[in-house]
Image (cartoon, rainbow over all chains, first blue to last red; front, side):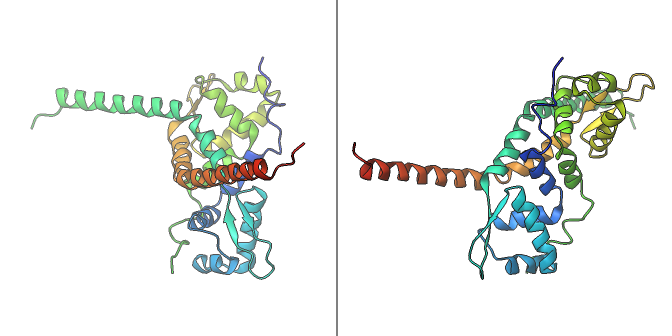
Length: 124
Length: 124
């Protein structure tokens, strides 16, 4: 009998990362940060959100390690961090064989259906 | 000024998928299901969890489209679904260029540090 409970501690990093990604505004913030570091004020502009609302999102992203913030009191730029994004990519990659095989089977099934449709299709 | 709010509707699929993945038990269930469909009873065994607890997790996974369940009243096997996993992989893939460049830069920086260490290193 395989035991999963011990190897999957409840407060794991990956859960925090996925939790942080479960929001469209937070994903849009990450997308914006691929272009380079930016201040909270500049970040808030395109989202039409209050600074406290954006700050809340940034805290969630920071706790998950997805962003870091500069130390400068006046200009605390937000910066995207590479490692957690790579963890997500690696996690998803692990399933690639499964989903590619699945989608290939679906593709074959649809082709088979089309063939049958042609063979027994309504002749007008 | 770029507007993000309208293109990122709050109740989007990807948020539901990431939300469902933000739990180690749910990720372990998905991992188990790569080996093939399985009943709730068989699924509950290795997790040392009650059936209602497992059922709750399955409902979250089902709502996110990550699994489907058979119609048979007695034997309702859970089945992994490929499409949402591919969505996660595609999302993460979009950041690959960013995180590979970042990690390369870190690698170069560490090599540079090692070089300096060798040059100015303590001679014993």
